[in-house]
Length: 126
Image 1 (cartoon, helix red, strand yellow):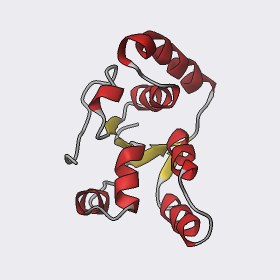
Image 2: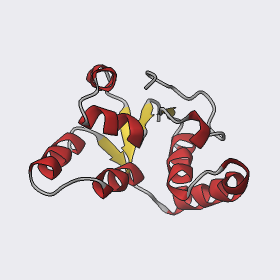
Image 3: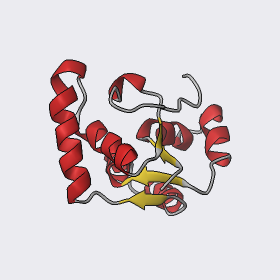
Image 4: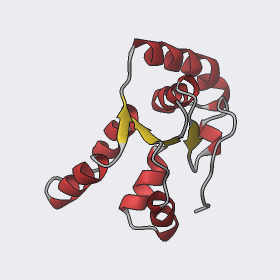
C-alpha cells in the first residue's frame, strides 16, 4: 500500500472551512485514506442533523482502514513505548500503527503526537 493517511486534525480544519485544509483536501491523490479511529474521533464532536449528515457524506468520499488485531497490537505497543515518554495517547498510537504497517505517509498538524512516525507530512501551519 502506498499513499497518504490523513489525521483527524486536518479533517477537522477542512470541516470547519479553513482555506488551507480545503485546498489540501481538494488536491488529495486517489491513494488517500483515513483510519477508523479518525472516524470515531470526528463523531465525538459532531452535532446531529445537518452537521452529522455532512460529515457522513464527506466520510463516504474517503477510504477507511479498519482496525484489526494486528493494528490493535501494534498500536498498543506504540502506546506502551511512547505514552509516558512522549505523552502519546492510544488513539494517536493506533493511527501511527496504521500508517507504519500500511506504509502510508501520515498527514498531520501534530508532529509531537507522532514521534514514532518517520516522514510526516505537515501540509500547512495553523
